[in-house]
Image 1 (tube, rainbow, N blue to C red):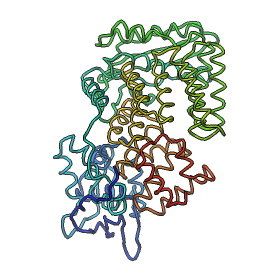
Image 2: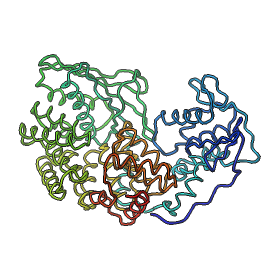
Image 3: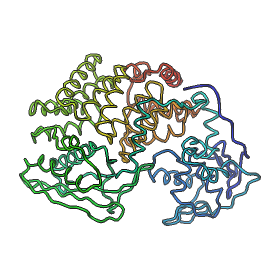
Image 4: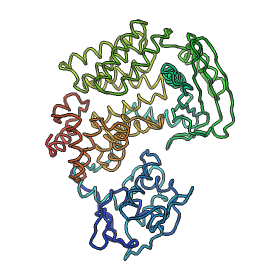
Length: 571
């Protein structure tokens, strides 16, 4: 919720001396000899954390844990902040006078630090270390350095909530309990299968085999199934933050020779790197589905998990037996994920062709429904209501053909959410997650819907579960998480997650809009004006009222806040 109260300011001095610079944490700036340099709050927080430990080597892990507590970020986030700090300080990495890089160790501050009294950052590390895990999650402003929060406190009080939502919905509580119970169950990571040649069909087949294997194994409740990044030269896997450690790792290659298909699959113990099973399937190209029928069950037989007869039947289920329809569907999926009007129309044609080749291909109907839903959401058509109705008809057809796959429930939920029928949307997603406990898109959409109905605190853990299941998440997951944090009033975490979304897709208008709202709430007029220009360049004539017409956000208070924030930028 939004209220006009401010958390108490942290005590401490307003400046300290680091080398030749006078540092003013509350203003996020350095000054020396009449020159003043501004830095972002995260850069200041990193500097203060190092200044609290002068001369000590601070590991990258410690900095990421302290400064980005509770936020899923990559190593490049810290690297970029250090680059910005060095530029601001006039430091050179090869001959550092301020921040020294320690190979395989981290960083250390080599410049002298002079302070007149204890400053807020001096307590960040010890205080954070003494907090229990739950305390760390409940105090992200402390973990991000109390000083960095002061800037947001003064400028962003309008967005800050005064109390934490403690009522957890029944359906979410049950789901959270299920997730907790599964932390002791085996975790299987699946790397994208690698196409060994340059044949476009080979690439599509590799992508399809990977996606279908993730889906197949996700049907088994006794597994935590995640999709990880492609191979980077090592055999072990790395678990995403807060996820159970990866026990098993599946990888593979795909190669096509004329009308033959060779698929090599490996199952390894991620802790030791020991290969537990490997098999090469060499069949006629038309034997793709028989290969897929064998891979999942063979992997499951080697895992310490009990698979019910119903789960075995679902794992063995193929969505089509028509190879041409399957390949055409994969082309449609690739075009749909671009999320531009021309590609959306191309995806629609591919899905129609797939249906023409197999009239019972439920996933193709679900994909076709999404193209019409995208027309509505992005206002690519003059009759949005008709497009949404068409999306609903096709989604219902997909469900009637096959009510046992997650996409049919997901697309129905998506359409219902845009019809503002959020309760029905949540019901479909609950069913999908019962059938597919590791269905990342289901958790993400459910988290987004909770934000839309004014309960972002309930949405955050679901969105974070989605990101844990897919550590290399696309821009949508991060946009939804940034949006939730914005509505919770946590402007720093909102900004970090929206930056992740925009780094993956800088043309994503929704992420730009929410980022502009963050900058307005934080009082950063220059950054807000820059975002406004980006929005106008992407969508000339943009207005917040028109944008909200097809936005699933239903909570009146949240809509009003967005209108007021964007109104300050002339929208």
